[in-house]
Image 1 (spheres, rainbow, N blue to C red):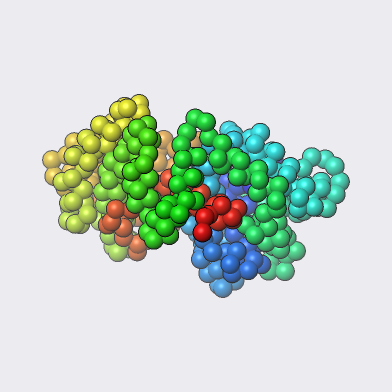
Image 2: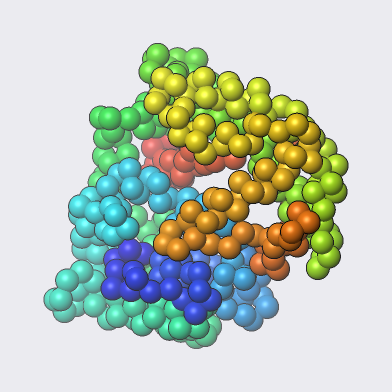
Length: 380
């Protein structure tokens, strides 16, 4: 994605929000859905959205794709791991990424994909760049169903197309983590015990709780901090998600803070957040992350009742949106002087909060698991 979109990194699509890598992701997901076998599409982020768009004969776009692609999209799911591995650096291809790209293009028979030399890969790269440029202008995928470029994704980017040298390089990168805990996590994940835990639950919380049983002190400290912070996060996220559902139910009418405060998840959060936040901060102290947590979330702790708390929750969202680079982003709803809100059409949803123990944030076990399967690392 980064290599194809490198010359367009400062551009934004006609929709005003989608960067070049997002446009490329639309093509990638749509291409795999159009041309890859069913087994190659399992677990593909955005697959259902692409299938619906194709069935409706409309292009993929921000309106037809995932609501939060930077978290749940293909790029969002793998971006943190790519940065950690050095595949991406500063928004561009990193040193490890360039080496991986070189191995991939060579094994795929795509000479010319990198650099200025000729070869079959040069025409493929040109075709992709032109498609992304057209997608930026349109704010959506801009190629019809007969486009020759769709098959590129299944032929060269589907997990089943990983070649031997590429697989060896990725495996070495995954297990080489001298400053972190990825090696320990990977070793447990591909072990017989770790595999059974993950396959039985698919829950990062349950997986990490089992991992903690045999973790050293430093890793156990990190896992305890994650668990505590996610307890706090789940309370806030469920309340916010249920607020969005209630705003959606009201359509174009205003929703008052009082109405939002009556939601069970909001009342639960208003009651439990102070204690959950205190515990999270406590567990984050050894990691030197407590100050940032306090700076970011302290306003959610200082409330007298559910109505006051939900107003603080809405303001917290607005603050986060204003701080987003490069020039801030609009909140997902309009706020009025009387405190009421109307949700913006793009963010309407009927999906309530999970109301369970699942983590809000992704800690990439699913990504690592998919790599383990694709590279045949899982012990049977």
